[in-house]
Length: 324
Image (cartoon, rainbow, N blue to C red; front, side, top):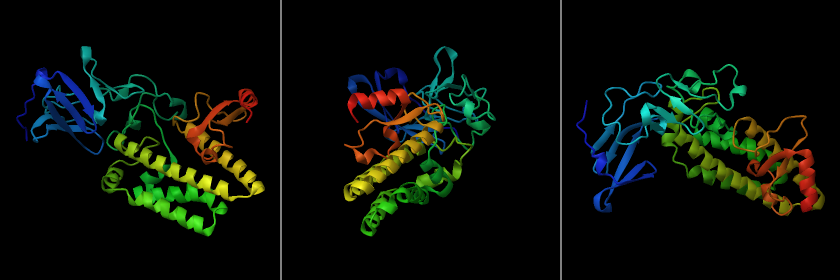
């Protein structure tokens, strides 16, 4: 049912974006709050003020073009997938960060930066031609093991699987029974803080398509959890390091350093912003360099976020210069 809505945009002197909406400041600097109501794909469907008055209504075709039934669509620019719609000079394209997207043709206006990894998909395609089930959060296609687990198994179950297969598996042979017990408790504490109700709904509605996945909100939430889990791993790497005698400690360091570099290679290969500007290529004499001195920061050994790839000759020069 159509609703009568009104919003005097020309009386606004300043606008400030906040999570879930924005604030406008009119005459006298009086703030007015505006809230987005999003669907499972992150599309801004309705904008309302603090009193619940509807100020904007958006209806979308599958690829993001606005339907004629939409109302007051110029009140604010954030629309499909929560992306900004640039209307200047009739451009009418969404800004996805890495690329601009034209909803009328359902394609990006430039090629996928990672297109050589997806020969079966057009480099201009949006969501592999399936906009009902997926979005492309930034015009690229980042992926991670944690997202893979959560999209296949559900959030809490997926996180537990990630912890078991990617953290506990590599550390458990070095941990005492008491340390392993405490590790399990600490991991469970992280999982127990999650409110997974909307996560599970998102997962039901947004399955994996190739390695284009989820919603931007979902991906941001997974990233927060990943950072917590990596901090947990770093904590126990340090504990193990401090508990081992000299020779076992040396073997542990060699093993953990190689694990961190291997993870960075996998993350970089999946399109994540990992490993610096140099791309790892097998057989090209490229080394993984720990940006933190492992002797001083042993907790960083397995953390792929601290790895930078560089040519082997430059890596040798770096260590010769700084003495480690």
